[in-house]
Length: 72
Image (cartoon, rainbow, N blue to C red; front, side, top):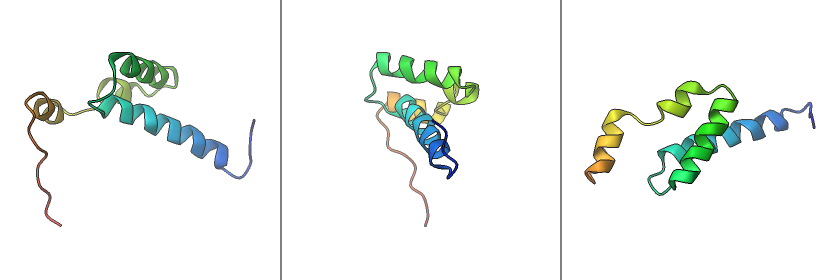
């Protein structure tokens, strides 16, 4: 189904965003991460599939540390 008003592309973008979020969510199961990574790879999002979280983020999650506070 192709739509000319741009809604179809937005849906695809939202799906990609959801898969990226699944990789970054610590509550996602291993099966869910695998599914998300596979879908990102199939659509050519190699960087997102393999480098979704920074080392700093992974370190903080592993040790249960909170994120840095941002100045507003």
